Image (tube, rainbow, N blue to C red; front, side, top):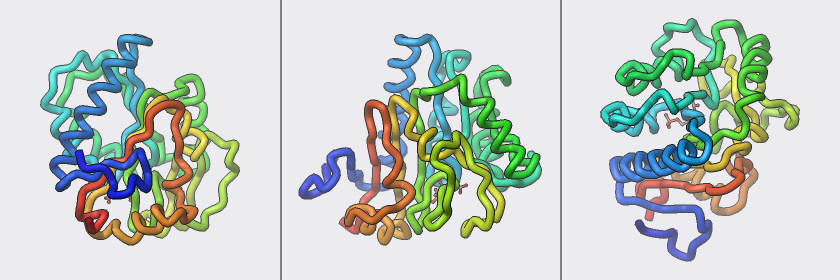
Length: 232
Ligand code: 6PG
């Protein structure tokens, strides 16, 4: 693993390419699952949306873990019909959850088809008894957003979830876990690949106040980046 040159951020690990990020992420997810299941008999993982995690989910779909001990949540969801291929839930199902023997009752998706306000309220009720999570996975957008927490958007930081409107990344209406909720996790794994993320990575390293830089964790926080994202 190549550490950042002058260890700007001790939690950062720069790997040669997106595949090595995916493989390392799978290793860390398995480690986190083993620890949680050993300690508490259940592994509560919050999945990231977008495209970066797709390869990770596909690799994990080929593993033979006891999936009945895993519970799956989503950090955010797009307000689209439940079967829309643009939904983060559909991406998680197609790349991973439809391919494994996981009980349906272990999957806690955001009911974003109900509309942002109603879905955010319902999901807050769903997750409040599940905290802290064991592992939160997050990607980062080109503007430094993460989940559906966008620069310039104001939210009540005490909320567990937010209804999001006028998202700069379509669709306009979304539901997101809050900074507080995404940080209420034993472990946090951030996944950033691709040269289109370079500007946001530089801003983050410069200490800019980006949504992604607000997320913390109770124990471990690991940031996996490929060289394309860090221009290194
Ligand atoms: C979404 C995601 C979003 C995503 C980033 C990175 O709904 O799109 O929740 O936060 O993780 O935009 O997206 P990529 O992984 O596709 O670059």
